[in-house]
Image (cartoon, rainbow, N blue to C red; front, side, top):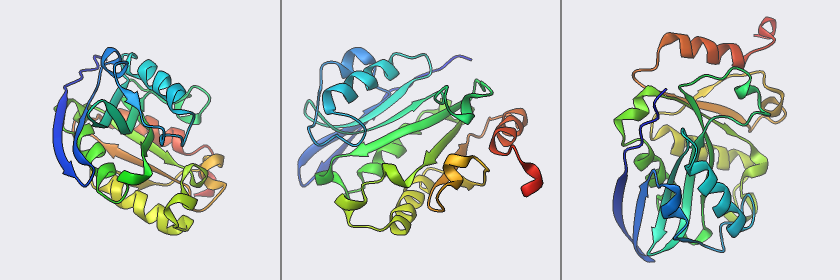
Length: 210
């Protein structure tokens, strides 16, 4: 599959000044920016920047960022599912995963997450993909937001649904290990039925339970 990457950039005015929401950003451009010290949800900022540069260099990898001048204050990643996850057991060429979305605390509650997603799906090529995302409560910043797991999940579902993600049931043990965890997916307009059928087989191993 050819992974087309059409670059978009949207200018936004915030209380912190002018920011740009843009992507997919190529790895060589990402290397010229600094990652804000508040981007610590997954690993230290410098290590996360290196990981994101590597993702951007993958054929299917897509990185959309929010930057204030040359400082990245938020990002979202898209790539093939982790080989250790169930979702990689069947390598579906047109199925990618929203792997991480993070915005520094100062920019939360300003629509930054929705803006990252909106720019992510501006390219017509995204209608060729089934994009999945797995939401685990242990990745959520409950302490920083002051939300409980259910309010946080509602917030995530609302944000994801703004670009067409929907809830999908699954018997994946990591997701079913806590009722707040969930699987969501966005089906592009040109995704063939075969892709959905293969995704359905990945979702359920114990179909007699459902």
